[in-house]
Amino acid sequence: MKKLLKEPFLHFVLIGFAIFIVYAFTVDENDSENAIIIDDSDISHMVSIWELQWQRKPTSEELAGLINKTLKQEVMYREALKMNLDHNDEVIKRRLAQKMDFITSDVSAMVNNPNEEDLKEYYNKHSERYMRPAQYSFYQVCFTYDNHSDPVTQAKLVLENNSDISIDEFTKLGDPLPFPFYYESIYANKLNSELGGNIAESMENQPLNQWIGPIESGFGIHLVYITEKTDPQLPSFAQMKDVIKRDYDYDMELDSREKIYKNIKKSYDLKLEANLDSEIKEKILTEFGS
Image (cartoon, rainbow, N blue to C red; front, side, top):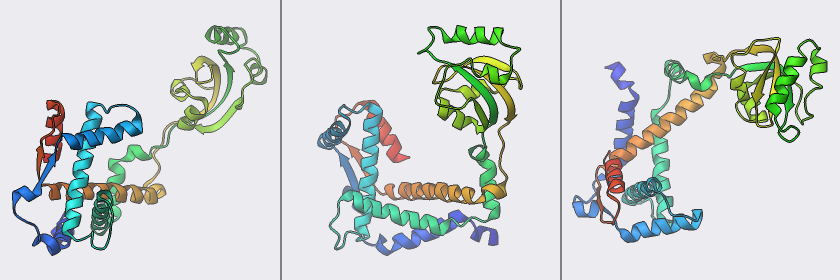
């Protein structure tokens, strides 16, 4: 029994019930008043706004997304009106729907109070989020397309003819560029960001302490001399606890808000009277009914 009382979902149900019971008696049981009608004029309005912003017509998937967004706004708007959130407040539907979102966020905050065990379980389930990428320390020279008609061939020739010279001498054989010849302990994702392309992935299985290549980046063709590599590592739970707590709270808030929306929209009937493609109509009806 004690374990049941500690269940977050039970808290969610009880708190949600407490919030909505205050206005439950005001709900009209007449199904027609709970009907949501989307007609051609509504679709035309959505498309017009989209075209003004993006200078093109929406795709079928984008139109379906617009309709779903409008449906969610309408459901939240009507529920907000039932709770008299519009009293002395002259705001548009979007603002009222946002107020409903704020309430569901508050419910989520009250429900989700994870303990150490909850956070560790979340950490283990989503460990790939916190994996630190590989790190590299290496020298590099680059041959650009601006300076060479065939930089790949040039890189191969330099590699074949200069295997016995020092690193300092080797680094003088490439083109001058606005980044260092030597990178120390740089993460793979940062390396890709600085040089462009997927240069870090090309270095994954390469040997240490010898010139290898050619390897392509956003600047051109590289020869690299890797001195040190650290494989991807997962930080400990203690190191990432604050980040894990933040991510947990965010995910649980999204989940709780979606559960509340799904529960609310059950009391509404959707009538699609617009002249829509059958595929779009089926997508909307399926999404609203799920």
